[in-house]
Image 1 (cartoon, rainbow over the protein chains, first blue to last red):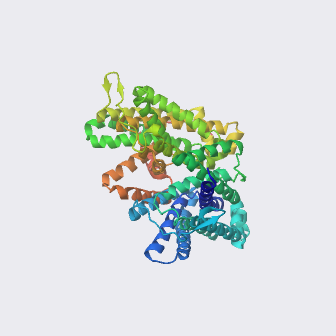
Image 2 (spheres, rainbow over the protein chains, first blue to last red):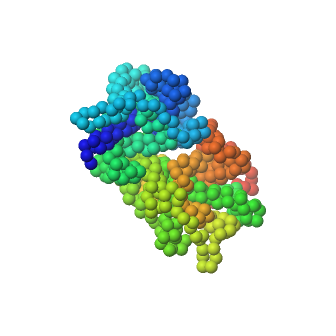
Image 3 (cartoon, helix red, strand yellow):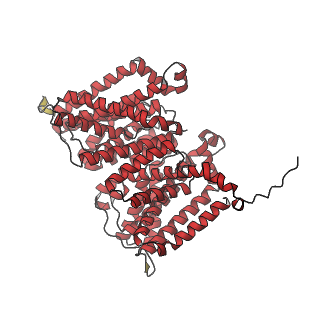
Length: 291
Length: 327
């Protein structure tokens, strides 16, 4: 493997790692704070990509506006999902809520299949030039995805430091005690849903100029998120971030070697990792709902 | 089991045996599908008993189907040993895959199960040995001696046979020591382990027994569809299995999944809903059921009908065995 190919594969890995990180932290946030296994996380990622496509191609607005629109649209959809469905099923228990998100996922994926069809939708690349460092050229649009993911992660870090973010962490730690401290649980819940789903939407918006939008992208993403959360340890957002980049880079190199079977390579590695580090890379076992 | 349930089961059994004379082959075909999905639903209800939701059932269904098909096509086995070996393969593979995930609790099992489902699906489609995305070639029909199962009624009875054996084994297990241990694990993990129940071992046994019967269902699927292709074992099939169990009623491990599979397979057929809209409507109905009747169809029975039946004198269970103690 020469240096040029190595750099290309590495950048690909970092790019998918950044995207996995966004979706996986959203998933972990929702699981930790409101204890809902959000199966629709991958579907919101797919919808985010399509919203971006619609705004850039159909309305002709610039790409940054489209990113914001995808973020807002998915945040609103996430909050609506909480108010419309989740708040009614959460008293029935963890399994019922899980099934409801699964059913929502089925509605979203089938509806978008009927609306958009199987064709891939292409959004023109924002940057067509490529960056050249020491004779090795790196695609500019991929670097923008990495940069965008890092910006969103930093913004999320500062959001978690605000009063609202601290309240979320408190609610994740112990819901009853958080309530006694005057934290409004319902408000925390819908904001968490909005933030978690918004993260998925922005991930979809960032990736769409590089990989075109397709209706099946959500399921594949969700399985990667499962792997990332298993590697990073449950309930640990920093672990999810680290694990996302590890999984992304390993998958990128494995894809170079074995093609479509790269998923199997990651799966086997995750299974082996669970023998040696049962708590994931960084995580401490989260108090699991229902047990 | 009260008298009302005994009568209902007896009538149902007679109806099911007489069915090939009553309906046309198309309905029998739908019944065969229902039997297959019922076996998957039963396995889901089995693991729900120990507090584990499964999303990998379609994958093990596929493992059973592919093992049976490939052993018959490439190994030259006949149907019955191939079916048995398929079940054993599903058990051994499940043991290898879940041995690390099982001690880490429900959430890891759930996520790892999802990852397993997608990975096995990908392997079926990509590795050339399994015949690619279009599936294996045409599998010969099952046979006992010179008698082959090719017509609809014969295949229907074959499915009825597998489902009955499945129900009987599960019924026996639920009423044995193992079943009581599973119940204890399901109601409280801490209590079960403090009572000396090895939670990990019992959960593992539960999952592997489920794997075996799901693989048998896969073999039966091959017996009537005569081909195994990845499209039949995709992730959304696992989701449908979960819906059967919840629609039927979570509290009933045997009747719930079967009733759910029956309702969810026949209703779209009856209303002749277009295939594209079927899963949307099913999912929306699912959400409404979860919100408005969380215990499923049999939850209605528990809540209202059972009390009314108990008031009818001749259906009441004879419980004169306990002598009344004068105070």
